[in-house]
Image (cartoon, rainbow, N blue to C red):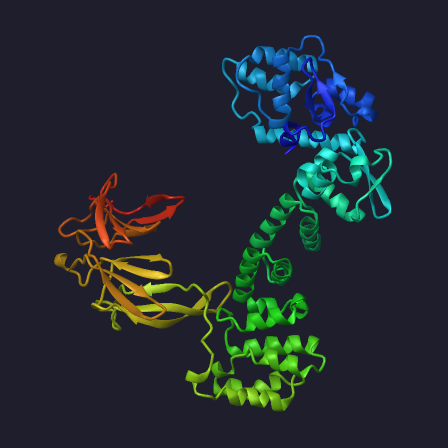
Length: 550
């Protein structure tokens, strides 16, 4: 930051007051008309060594001046001696500082005054206006065919490349400040970095954001890179997902790459329809096609995507076509789909090679490195009770189902295709609670039937990868119609119906590491049928019924 540079004595160009406090003239001129006048009259002397001394104007105390200095860099007035600071601020022509002191001195202070961060942004906007007027520009940079005047401080605060260039003993240390300094940047790159230095934003269409990210990596503008990566990970669309995936792969940005890849896999049919899909590098296409998480309605969609890409990029390369098509899981196709393979892949591969791949798919499944594709996370329904076929009675269930895929229906409606996952090991269960920790399902309490004595205290842990159940320590009391929440290494069971009690306020906590339960601080009131969740290390409980059934 500018204050760090000031403390280190880097790029400072004025020495103010009786003790020669070092500072940056452009920062002071952004809040003070006194220093603005100095900057306008003596801008050519700013790079003198030692910096020129600036005496304080009449009516300014040393303490008041240093409070103004702190405001210029930090956006806040130090506490104490506000009246003295206000008088010094008026003498220095710093109205924002005087206003901040006046608010603090008021008997009934106004709420909603600018925060320190807002004041710092205001100072930065003032610096931008000075730059637009050619004030405070202490160096000229050659970028392409253009010579652009810049404020070294602004560029140094936003870009490590320029900070090193301007503060380390490199060739510019002996450079004539009146002559342009060559940088190797294009004019577009330099103007982008200048714009971000003053605004903290990137404006423009999607290609401009990609170019900004590349520029930020090239010149170590980490704030700009953080902004671009935030756009990449929170504004993904089928049209932009592949660009982000390729960018992350090219620059080794693993976390961004994982986010983009998960998005592309989940929206693969929409991604395939975009023009950017045809520009996807071969190794990325193969990685997507080989992923277990590829979201396709049927495997023929994967073949259609591979064929579309090969039609645009294959150019008769038989080895490439074979590698791409071998990533399609022909073993997952139905007989009807297999009959369409030759027509879908016509013109993109040698029919003999295609035939070999299809024949190989008929090898016994145990010998194939082939898994059914599914999303990494799925919706699971556990037990519950349901109506009998004639709607005459309710029947508890012991089965677990997961959402295999979502089929388009009318409008925005999706039809869910459910598949069996397993069943409870001890029979039917309903009005229970579930929690997920580390992709492991915990089932707690509930009822086996509708009687008062049918409430359960048992707890089970389900491992979906090997379809196994494990009995854990039981709760201290039976519970149904309650909420369970995982937080850290613990699971909390909150309230619910217990025995003869319609609802209870008791809370107990399960220790995952030690397989033990202990009582916790009870709820403020007895509840059942409520909802609960964990957020930022705290538990939140909402809704439900009390003892009066309200």
